[in-house]
Image (cartoon, rainbow, N blue to C red; front, top):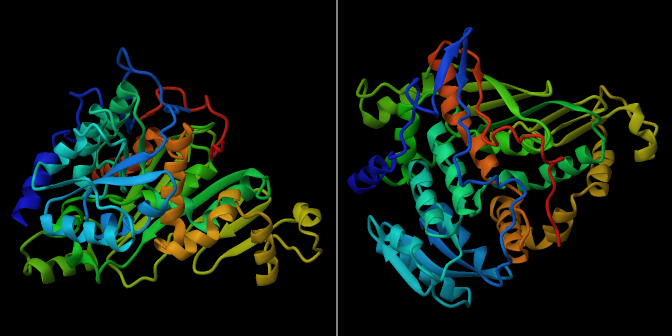
Length: 464
């Protein structure tokens, strides 16, 4: 435990800046918190639409072989044009266990093995890897990603990619300067219902999408003990705000074409007291030993530059059934994923659906819903669904995510999610905390594209 805490402490080398003395901080103006958007440093170029040279076989170095990293080894070796050539974990026994998994899958053991506190640096310094895949505690994401890009590697980072606004800028600036991809592994963008609804929205079935919702409501009681060194409980214990926003935020940002025609502009957050959170902390550390900071539920409302709204929630301590909310409110239709998938489409869509039993105030019947979902299944899901469900990984969405990453790198195409997605979605970790700290004051969000949020026209998944 001490070793992981030391690593986490060292990782906060890119500190959170909440005052007026940093180019990445904020000031309070007219009762609003206004974050700076500093000019792009000389020598950097925008990464919007960036595509690297095609990579024949994407050689992968995997850092972090706990739950998420070890599960990635079930997927990566079977993806065409991908090869796991280096493994790293704090503990050498995890490296050997991972090597044995590769052998059981009938693929070669990784050529390089690293362990210990600085093994990840040695992995990043290798000449024979193209992609560093990071599955480590949140606080280590940005320092490791920055180091990897500075050593010429593309980076894929588990969620969230960063925990502070300054870390978000570090990812953006390093990616722009080194011309290396930095993708956050937001797997929920690749779930089947989300992909299909994105396709429906792009085909106009919802009309103008005006409001969206997403969340991470997941009772973590069975899993708290599984985080090495207690790092996740410690982070929730020490921070207010939405500390894990991207599962809910990523898919709905794609619906609204964030930084591809619109941008998140103003944010307001509010939380409850830590009722269950404090009780769990008392049980874990002793009654009154710590003050548990994170509210049981955090709600964040965001308004976009084009007048749309986003609502996201975070709740990990109540016995609430799993829920990512995922709702779409449009001028012609509505979609909701939880507690069960539902579609409501207005009369303007009757000719498309070949049915006269549509009512905008009622859900379609299960048969109608399934017919629509089948007709508008996203082409990527249609191509990969059978294999993805067989391989698994949160029902298959992990496999689609990894496959798309390798496909784009192999073919020299822009990635589905870029460094600005990683920064914008992750920035809510700090922005929500700052809003709450100032009495739920509105926050004017930074523009990580530096004014280029409307340069691209909509979300597009590139294909050769």
